[in-house]
Image 1: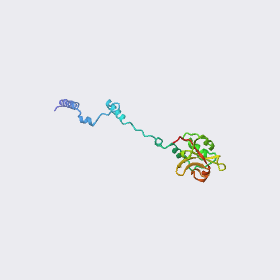
Image 2: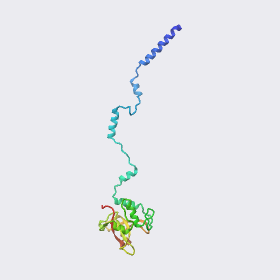
Image 3: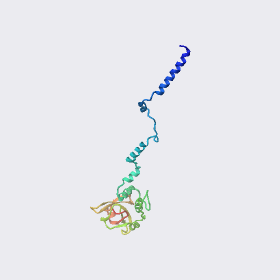
Image 4: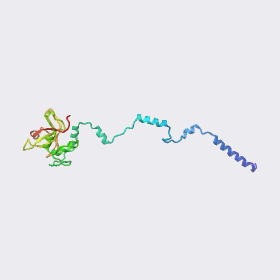
Length: 209
């Protein structure tokens, strides 16, 4: 074949291939295999609407922080909360006039405990006896009440105070937590001779239960 015929033949071949490539449609399965990328903004309105409706049906559930869980799960009566807090100071040494938290005397101890729950008491036993509400009798006593005792030399002269932690209705006694001179913050029973002889009465700071 002469050189004059080779060039037209090559040109015709190239044009035919290009036409075939342009005319050949892309198979539908190929479209499925290589989908177009979409952003959130490019999705149809129906998709956004559907997602909003689903969110309304299944709202996000927030998990509270540990301290919030603790606060919400506390269903105990206020009196029980007061006692639990008072017991955190068990063993704290006694010191006359000390307001805590490293050392306490008896009236500063009760003042410190009730202040935690929003109640202000004067840090003197006789003042607290007058400030708090009277509890007429043992039958009316409840956990969280203040109990008062006289001094060694004069039972009528109030010199000590504690907080009732439990009641024994059968024998008419109560346990109380207080800042004692010998053992620091501790719990004792009202039937012990020392306290039985000096018991003066009870007063209430908390609401009636």
